[in-house]
Figure (cartoon, rainbow, N blue to C red):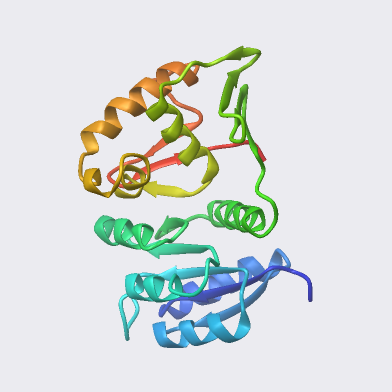
Length: 231
């Protein structure tokens, strides 16, 4: 257990804390819990967790602020917890650097899947990031800027490639409309979501077997997009 990933859970609902602790402990994770934002920030600094699960509705401070303060000094992956009607809060937290979100109520398998993805992404950050991203028949070589579908090279425009590379290099993470626009087009175009819709349609036509039912570039309704890679 000493080498098991350490997860910090910050939530003010005792039943949620108990449930998450039980689920993660059964899967051999080490778990620390906090019920307030300031306590969570202190534990994040002192216990150095590998992953933080953070509720947005905390009693002493807003969860988005907690996320922002964490990102001032650490890149520990953060999965946010939120209720169904807090879409704007989800977007704000993701824009502040959170990696993913779970909507309450959530299932055990969904929680564990998100935890595994976040920890893999963290391992890639710590080690040498893979230069090739694989997703089904797709191969994206980030070093040589080559995209292949099966054995056939896919011809992309400059913007299409830049968009795909940003999605693929952050595979598994939820990326908001604003973060994608800022990174691909620039901060001045952060509100031009119509650009994104047009280019996403074009990318899906070139990359997906069925663009209307995408397997690799998934839409997170009202929030942004997530790229699904193998492994």
